Each structure stands twice: as structure tokens, then as C-alpha cells.
Amino acid sequence: MAIYRLLQNSPMGPEQISRLSEAYEQTLKALSLKDRNDPLTELIAKKIIEIGQTGVKEPAQISELAIKGLGIQ
Image 1 (cartoon, rainbow, N blue to C red):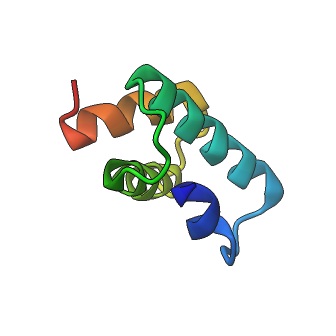
Image 2: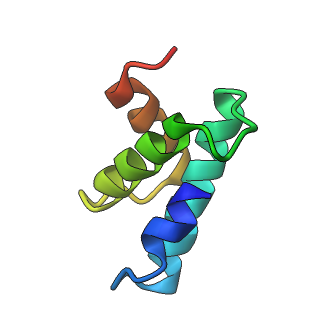
């Protein structure tokens, strides 16, 4: 689970980690990705963290921006 590994030593607070984790799960579900070892999941996790650091707080919006930002349909 890429995002959890990336956030493991993060200085982010529990609320922010929870929002990013929720956005990650929503994104994987929207893209029908079930294999957590798929390299695409790590790209998605990194993009979600990047977007989360810009101040976007809503998991659904973070998810949408990540999908658009990665050019995934």
C-alpha cells in the first residue's frame, strides 16, 4: 500500500494523513485498481500527497485532481 508507506515517516498530522488516505482509496476505487503492488498505485500516492500539500482538503477533490494530473481516464 504505497500511500501508507510514503506517509509512515511524514511530519503530517493525523487529520491530514486521514484525508490523503481517503483520497487515495477513492482514487484506486474510481480507477478500479485492486492490485496494491501495481506501480501505478505509487504514482497515484505521490500525486495525492503532492496535491494535499497545496492546501486542498477535500478527499474527493484531491482524488479528482490526482486523476486529472496524471492524465488517467
